[in-house]
Image (cartoon, rainbow, N blue to C red; front, side):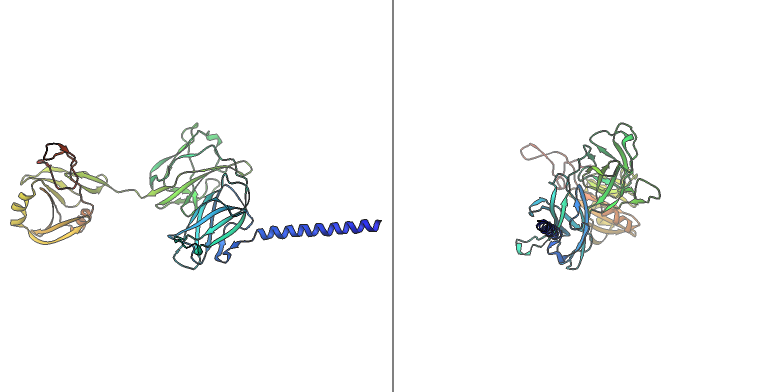
Length: 405
């Protein structure tokens, strides 16, 4: 009897060892990369890794996965059904079959937890589905963290922020400053390739409001500790990711701004007068006075000057034809000028209907650079058609009322 019992115990142990060994093999097999796995050089997420929240990723693939720098990054369930579609952008030259680096961000918040896949898909613009290529990286989709009730109101999607100017980073609700801690609340800035570039270190002016000014483009490597390095962002497309942690360092909420554009500050402004526009340096205000020797106005410029002529026929008959020497016609910017010479100076003449514009100056290089921004725009004034009905004036048409100054 004892012998039979020992035999049963041994069989049970052997059966258990086989069962758990088989399960371990299945588990290991489930963690292997599938599909065109030889095309994957590297990826920041390992097979079998648990992922959740906002996932920042990067990798390298080869054998042509990109179109216009884009590659597909999707999240699938364990049956390879699509849960979340996304994409990434190449960070190196993508027009090659050699290895190409890429990076991006995808938000997993709200996805059902359990086994799944990160699918790397080639961007195939054709209708030939046989050219599709996929790489499947098995992962575990973690339980979604409680999303923060706080969300960013500004900057919004598509906002243009001038580098060096102050802008408000604001939220939908107040959070007391005493609740803010640089180790528990981070404001990270990412570029369009999903690369974290640094952090915004907020300074609060009002205790009961969660909003602060940010000098656009100014970041710090970290807001906590010492020895942090200042970071200056160039013009480009960026996003702010706010992350809230608990005292154990666990993420309890994330929210992000819209994608905004950092742009370089303009050093000029658009001056508009007498039916034209031109870009002038900030702070420069032209003098505009009536000429003494004809139907014209003299407009001062940073280099040279401009004569706005209200009777182009008179000007050509009594000024240009008897005195000027014709040199050539030349397109400068959007406008074609007739160039003359008189007493060693060049004059640039442009006529539109009954009015004309004459530029002149000793430094022709600087003058022509300024003239590249000159545009004739006309006047938004009412007109009267043949029936006597008032009609809208079409800018740039060349038809003017009798008074055009």
